[in-house]
Image (cartoon, rainbow, N blue to C red; front, top):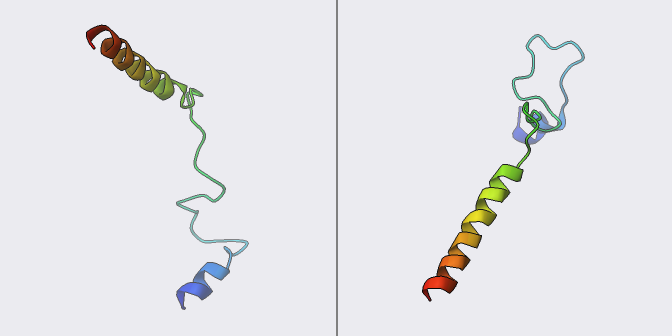
Length: 57
């Protein structure tokens, strides 16, 4: 089966094996935090850098 042929087909109605990589995106964040802690950390580091640059510059 050629690659193009493989990707053009869908799973059969009753597959023998369950899908190891479900379609439709990855799992939701189980803790529900999202990415806001990362953005807060990045903005905090940038603010600290700007404050130190102004004070020491």
